[in-house]
Amino acid sequence: MKINRVEFLCSAVKKSQYPDESLPEIAFAGRSNVGKSSLINLLTNSRSTAKVSSSPGKTRTINFFLINGGFRIVDLPGYGYARVSRSTSEDWGRMMEEYLSGRPNLKKVVQLVDIRHEPSAQDVQMYDYLRYYGLSGLIVATKADKVSRNELNKNVALIKRTLNADESDIIIPVSALKKTGADRLLDQMEKVLR
Image 1 (cartoon, helix red, strand yellow):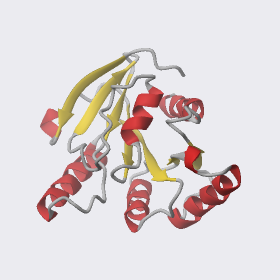
Image 2 (cartoon, helix red, strand yellow; image 1 turned 90 degrees about the vertical axis):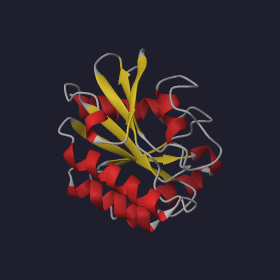
Image 3 (cartoon, helix red, strand yellow; image 1 turned 45 degrees about the vertical axis):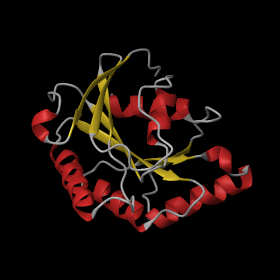
Image 4 (cartoon, one colour; image 1 turned 30 degrees about the vertical axis):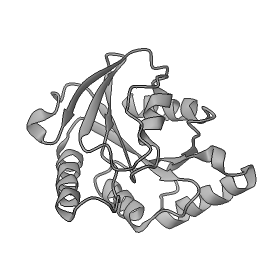
């Protein structure tokens, strides 16, 4: 699949603000600063589809993008950022729960983890949550340019083990900087949308 057209649709914090349910959606979830915006920009071949920030915790809404007029990419707020208040963190949790558990046209959630680190307890919790709702199975190991080829395979195995990922799960190392891994992810997304 190649992404030719991207249109920002809306930002939402509650169900009444979501676009209608007529098109399939693939959402992107991961810890704050894991590289969600950079990955979305890589996939859409744009520098400005999703806003990239050097400080974590900037995405505080659910952002919907229309892709090729046929499906949507959904950018979810990052989880696990320590510098937000407890009430903000709880609001994010409720917002994510409402979207992930109650969106019938949501086909898959691409979970992002940083290839340089063992997945956190929150990454494991998110994976279990996605598996419970039948949305798991596609994991992106971001920042692949930051590790050697030898470390890459070792770290992918560690991610799989720590998440207790299913054998059928696909883990794709991606580097937004070197522009690697995007084609493989787009192929998997195309399979999800069939």
